[in-house]
Image 1 (tube, rainbow, N blue to C red):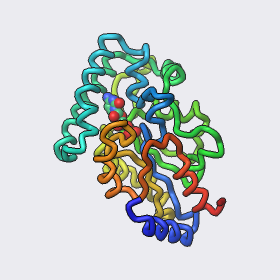
Image 2: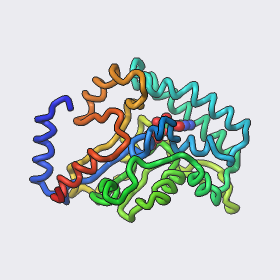
Image 3: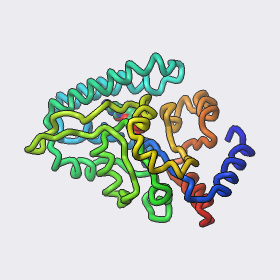
Image 4: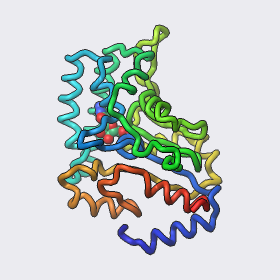
Length: 260
Ligand SMILES: Nc1ccn([C@@H]2O[C@H](COP(=O)(O)O)[C@@H](O)[C@H]2O)c(=O)n1
């Protein structure tokens, strides 16, 4: 924490306002899901498809070239957002175009997720408080259909969870033909939220937000942690380093809801 006293004051004022004024807004890939497990990188929503047999080897190669080109740019703290934004749009646009060419089958998505190494940060019921209380909204630049399947298979796709992401559009025979609506990438989630005024109108009685994210790139990578930590501390009240659990946000939720 950059300023522990400020964090304490914020939490106290949230407790005073009441647990029914709190909502959770979270990123998905590498925030609700693990970055690594037993020393092995866990996949993002896109990577679940990249690694699956739903795409050809040629397509896999092309997506890998894109990942190797653009991911280092995504996590490069020396570049400004203005510099990175058009490149991120380029990455997502190219990757989605390639995926659409593969005519991916909707009915095989669940198997691709089941066969993948995707893993939520915490799966025991006692440690998923963030997913079961305070009307959580997940904003993800990943793939909505895959994301939903990950949380469904983990047993935490509760009826109050709302997902904003890139959803696939399938034809009448269940083959991927496009992605629906405006592209959501890592730098336009705010715009995505503004487009969904109805949802936030419903949540207007919950102005106190517990925001979970990893938007400066992956702090948990072995190298570069120290130089990126300050940027995170400037933006977030609490920064967790090499923590593959949801213990802290869950403990905060329990505290705010008066359960601990
Ligand atoms: N072709 C792609 C494009 C993006 N990614 C990763 O997805 C992450 C976005 O999801 P969030 O839930 O974190 O919004 C992003 O960090 C990219 O690294 C990908 O793996 N492949």
